[in-house]
Length: 173
Image (cartoon, rainbow, N blue to C red; front, side, top):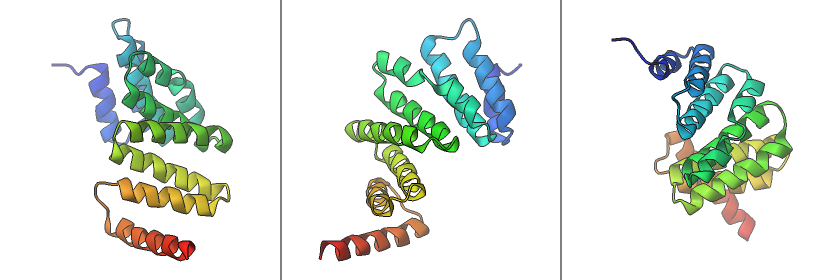
């Protein structure tokens, strides 16, 4: 039994052959029988793969517009994830001022949808971007919110949470 293009893409992704995965996901998106939302999902997968293959412009090109398709179908979760993917591509291109509002919009939507794990991931991205742009205090707040939302914390994150809580306490004095 032969694998579908999507299955080949998933296998390539698991094998960390991100360029091949991106190309295959894009092929799957462009198949004539692909539904609009399935094509948008495949484009998002291609975008992540392109980012991991260090091709941020291609990542941005394929993901742009997919959040709107998900939104039209009232799929706010995948719309928020697509916004996050678009923001990641913009960030990788050094277009920080364009990336930040997309991350914020994604985080707000994920909060409304009560998706703490996904929101935590986006908040960590916001925090990292705030550090890159010299906004350390905002980064501290974003990281604290991310750690509060995380369902589980690694040992490193537990230490970071203690530090952010301690700094927050000091700032309130």
